[in-house]
Length: 457
Image (cartoon, rainbow, N blue to C red; front, side):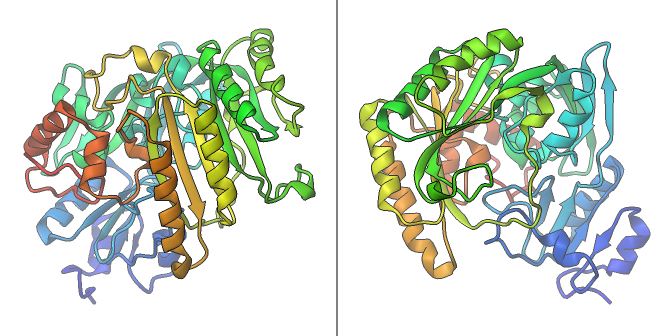
């Protein structure tokens, strides 16, 4: 029996695909359509989990011929909900996890269903790494296409700065190998342009020598002086060090004093990719800001920077991403004032110092257009139920406006469903024009539209 929205039966699709095919009512369907964020509840007509680029091509052809909306899922972390469709087709890459590591040449071919944690653990056995984000369960497909800002960003740049080639299934079903010499326009576009140009099935990454690192979480009391001191230390630190300051209310964690729960604090995430002694020296200014509430910084293999995650945890939150030029005392006081003014169960201002290797790449070398941006800021508030969302969204919007400085950009990887103006902020000026031109050549009918969309020129 065919779905009312699907002109071919799931049983017929199972004859075509060696991977799993799930339709409404099938065992496992509800788990398969569930994504990370708890406020996204969509029911696709079918979920297809291909096992090869050839099968991906068949899914793309099915979407093109039926006109059904196509969602592409790697890790399911899209804040905007682009990992799942309502009534359309979900192309679920999670069963495509092949990884071919060339230790001698320090490269790896990785299928895009791998998570950052899975990839990092495997290559970490050889003392190697590629920089992704700060969450191990994120799919490498989504984070790579968006740019990739993580714990190695100052030392080795963005994820796309380590991307050497990719295998992409385009809108006409063709399987294309793209790199600096072959389809260079497509290679430029997928390094930051998101999923607008095709389904990336494999990536070839440069591997960096990253054995043990010095890093972990550092919990500090909150004050404007500590916030500005943390950011100043991060900006002046060696490029081997990348850090994040989460100014937030203390969550219920077993290693935190229970009386701190719900109180403001600074949760720092720090990674020094280098020798232990040099790392301890680089981290000393952060520890000197105040007596730490908890100091969990230690020498560890790089993959251990990704803490264990609870697969059953599906938060509901409103967020806003932006860039700022500096965090001075006035800005720090604004952050504290806004966080104190809210009673959201979890609320946070996340501050990431950029620069270093990321900033030395020419701005037009990739579709990621924010090489000169100094600090990334993400503000967020959790909400409880649909009726609570509007006031949390209003608070987030007002908070972000209060922090706005001269940089109008936005990072596509953290962008929610915020409209074309915000997508254009992620791709300002000539970047948008160039991306629209590439889109027109590789996807003229906008088949790949469930994303932060760039319509074809």
